[in-house]
Image (cartoon, rainbow, N blue to C red; front, side, top):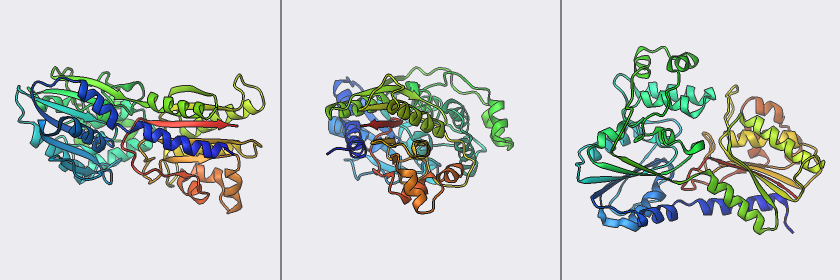
Length: 414
């Protein structure tokens, strides 16, 4: 006998299986024509799987090869490829070392060379060379402020690009005159290639008001101020870009899974972008309206959302946007007499600075917390969703998934 929570857990496993990037990379590389001497750079949380697929297709046709992924995300050796791990979401010394290694390997390429550049989310932190006068401590401090600010990705990247010598199209200039074919897994809503991994081979599309951003972040250090005001490349001519996967695929996979189980499913949006706790409350309201028959949807049904919510940090707790969304929804669903479940999943397997991918809750979750002395509303105010969900076994833990296409939220009503 199925229930909503069991169906949800099955869906999580199926979506992660479907999102494995290796088959997409194999497909696009098999269909591509390469006439020059080949080299390869892979950066991001999906870098290892993308690189493994590239090696399967091209093998020793690839000369120099460097793979840069998050600590703990490498799955072992890949042929003759050089594999490095670095810090995420906060860059570390390994991030700087990896950035310099990339320049050392690829800055000397010639016109007869071609760089296959495999890019996925997380590259902003994993691959870095700092602008003159900027220290690793500066970068870490600014990154922490950006993450706590709730700023949108374009404003965050406007700052990160200017502290860097490899973001915002600058790496393309370093590799020139060699050509670059970039194959990208998008973790940015709208698939803006200038914002995925801070656009190492793509110029900035639109520059936000930098002085306003610096003021909001209280950035007063002269070296940082000088870096933020500098100009970046307006155009690069040696790059061809192809998006090979995004959050739409995750939503379609979930929809297919539930429909195969006989549950009608609707993709509400693939561009959810708001405060995480507000998203949780809103989706919970949609659920309650369906059970009250105040909606065009009827049960059984699955409501599917793709996107990336925001968290403004006010507390000192531990969590991530998916965990915060799930806890907020649980509070709003408390007391509802229905077989329903909501899960919010970071498709990379990592939600915030935690070992969880997200949270999975039901109308009983809050009562389970209260029974062991947890005040969910107080926990939410302290941004401590991880510990509350962990206490009632409501965390989703997948480990590194090998991809990164934003977040998937599903509300399952039976």
